[in-house]
Image (cartoon, rainbow, N blue to C red; front, side, top):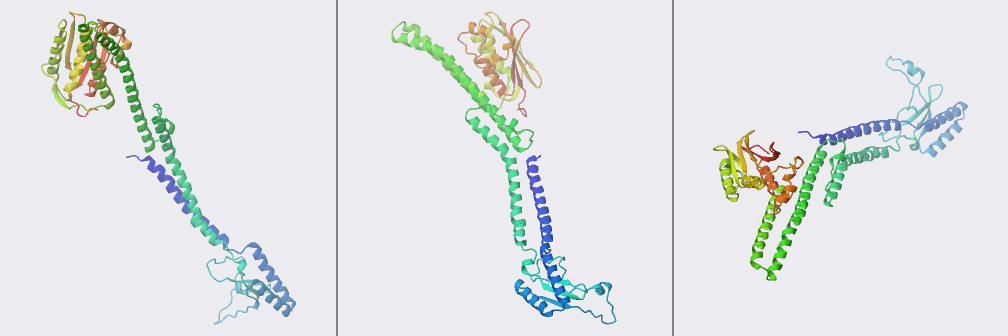
Length: 451
């Protein structure tokens, strides 16, 4: 499984850790190296002391030399002396050329000083004869590494802390940028901005956070569509209910006034039945569109279903002829008898509505692409080509439909589409060469493995 965000976080952490170790090691070594030498101006002071001691020694004024040494020791709180070195080889050994040129009893002022040795070293400033030496214990004020504790504190605490804070800021920006966009989009969506999207704001990123943004966008799109669908349904339902309610109110007023009660009571009953059917169909449509329900998984025979539906339609439309052909048996599984029966009945009844009295509605069922295709052909006026898809929209009716069926509401085919799609099939409309309309419904033989 790809984890790009893991590598994005691991990269700065690994590089930051390596950089921190290298910087601390390098700076620590460099700092200790530079702090291990006596400062240049202190070296000059020590050399001046050596020159003064040599001058007094060569002048032969031992009293002046002694006084100067005592004054120096008191002033610097250290030890100082002028001595001779006389190295005698033993056991038949000889002195090397280095010893013949000169011998040191202490450290050269330019040598490296051990910072962790507790005692100050003795510095040796050899006179020009190579055998007389001015020796002085390095005064504490001249000892290098005075700021080593502070430097160590900086390198071991302040610098790592600064690097960790920098890494934290990098990771924080890496994570919080997309999360802030997601938070802002969520707030805007909750305030009614249904068109807000996040993925486009994240640029070329491609990690788990962009996957989260894409998931949010899909959720927002689906939720927005459902909200808009509900709003349209409520608005359309309110509009469609207004007319029957007006007629019902007028009929009730006439009954209350005693005007032709026997005439208006059936009208009241009819309007109540129409409104009940309208509300029930609208609620069913809203349930199918918004809930994406998992319908009953049943095995059924489409031939038996067709026989039952056609028998009911023939009873309702005795002046129409229903013909066609279908197999003796057409079994499907994982479907819903109730949903398919309602969908097929709505389509056939719709065909009968637009077929003139005495006309024929042809129903044909045959196998097609791992399923069954049901074609329902009427002898009506057809539908304009640009409205073939719109007739499956809730409450949509063509101008011809509004003239021929003023009592219709345009929910039948919309319900049929949602019911067929809920069982894994599809429904389409097309005009025939004769000018009439064909509604085609396809049902899968089995919904196993289908989405």
